[in-house]
Image (cartoon, rainbow, N blue to C red; front, side):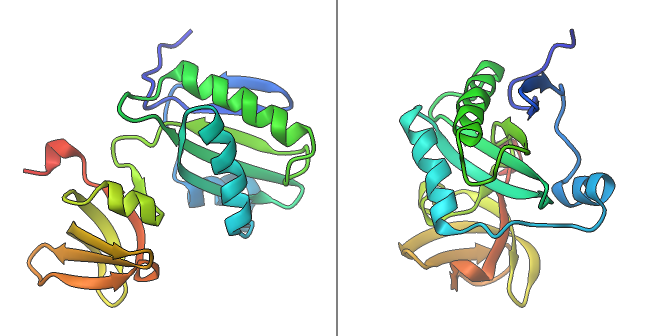
Amino acid sequence: MAHAVATDGWWRTSAGRSVDTGDTPATFPNVMRAKFGPRFFFMLTESLVEAFRTRLDALGFDLADLRIGGTPNRPLVQVRIDCPPRNVTVEDCSRISRALEQWLDAGGPLGNRYVLEVSSPGIERPVRWHRHWAQFVGRDVNVKLAGMGRVRARIVAVPDENTVVLAPHGGAERAYRLDEARDARLVAETDDR
C-alpha cells in the first residue's frame, strides 16, 4: 500500500467504499472536463454550506472549502476540512468521509448517487468565507481581484462581513467587497519572505 502524506491524500468514497488515492487530484475544472464532459455545478446555497459546516463542527472540524460538481445523476462533492491548531491526518479524512457518507446516504441533500472526496485544505489553503479572511489577517494570498486579475496581496483588515482590506504587492491598500475577491488561496508561509 502506498504511503500517503495526510495533507496530500484525498479520500474518495463511491458506492460505500473509501480509497486513499495517495495524491492530490487534478484541478476541479479538469476533473469535470475529463470525467463528466461538459461541466455541471450545483448551486452552493448558504443553507447547503451551513448543513455541511454544522456536521463538521459537531465532529470538531472546520469547513475549509466545499465544491459540488459532477453531473445531476452523480454529483462530485469535494470537502476540505481543517482542525486548527493541528494538521489534518489521513485518519481524520477517513472518519469525516464515513460520517458525511452516513448523513448523505440517510437522505442528505444530494441523493444517494454521489462521489465524496474529503481532504485537508493543503498548504495553499482556500480563503473562501468571511471567517477565513478574518482568521488570516496579516497573511498573503493569491487572489483574483475585479479589474486587476490574479495578484498577490496582504490581508490588512476585515472591517465587516462584506469587506476585506487588501494591499496588493506593488499597489496601494484598498477595501474590496468580498465578492470582488475570488479564488483566494493562502501563500505558503515558506514563500512569505
